[in-house]
Structures are given as structure tokens and as C-alpha cells.
Length: 171
Image (tube, rainbow, N blue to C red; front, side, top):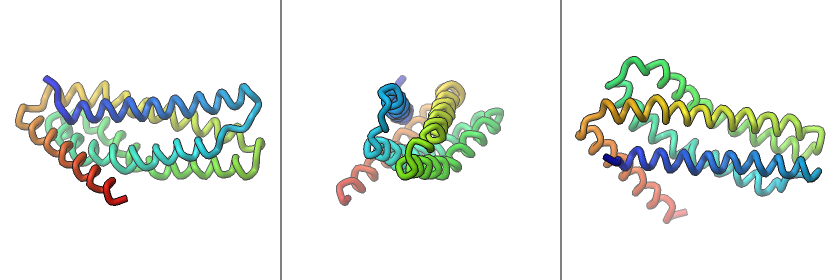
């Protein structure tokens, strides 16, 4: 049976993974061509990563999904603790990356290697984080949650989506 909460998480993971991989490809292409990357595009990509997963996606996981998993599968507490630490560190990580981008943009080629290395570390860590959620947390939820759990979780995810849509109307 399909559940809205899992569909939302998977869809958001796919969108974020595509953005991260595109960022990596953009930087690789610029290096191969011997040019600077389009900084405005890179900034926009980092802004998306900051706005979307750090402020919206992680909140749904941390506040809605993880507590139920922790309740039903206490053996996953160490995994959940690591994922929560990742979420907590996410805002700082993206700010550090944005700062490293600014240094590259202002200081030039001498900062390129540091920026590209920081991006690749960030991408690797983020993809590993999402893989952990998809290989450990989601299967546990599918296995252990009751139909009542899913009804509650799906309704909560739908409510968050409605709030997000309403917030977008006023911006």
C-alpha cells in the first residue's frame, strides 16, 4: 500500500539528489572547460538546498516520522540520533558552503579547489544521509507502523503541505 508520507519523502529525496548531482556536474564541466562556474547559478542551487531541505524536508522527518520510528523500533535509536545530528548540523553546513563559495567568487582561482572539495564532501554526506533514511528508516516504518499510524502520518504530511502552499501564496 502507498502512503502519502513516504511518497513525499521519496519525491523530495529524488529532487534533492538531482540538484546535488547537477551541482557537481556543473562544477566538473566548468573545470573541464577551464572556466569559472556560473556563480549566480551555483548560489541559486545552494539557496534551494538551504530553503527546501533544511527548512521544510528535515522538519517533516524529525517532527513527524522519526518519533514514530523511535517508538516502534528502539533498536534504531543510534541511527535516528545520527540522522538528527545531521539535520541539526545542516544549516551550519550549508552556510559554510555558501561562505566557501563567496571566497571562491571574491578571491578567485586560488579558492576553487577548496570550494569544489567542500561541495563534494557535502554531496557525499547528504546522499549517504538520504540512503540511510531510505534503507533503514523507511523499511522499518513500512514494517512496523499500523494503519492508524499511516493515517495519522499521512494527514500530518498533508497538513504541512497545505501550510507550505498557503505560505507560498503570501510571499
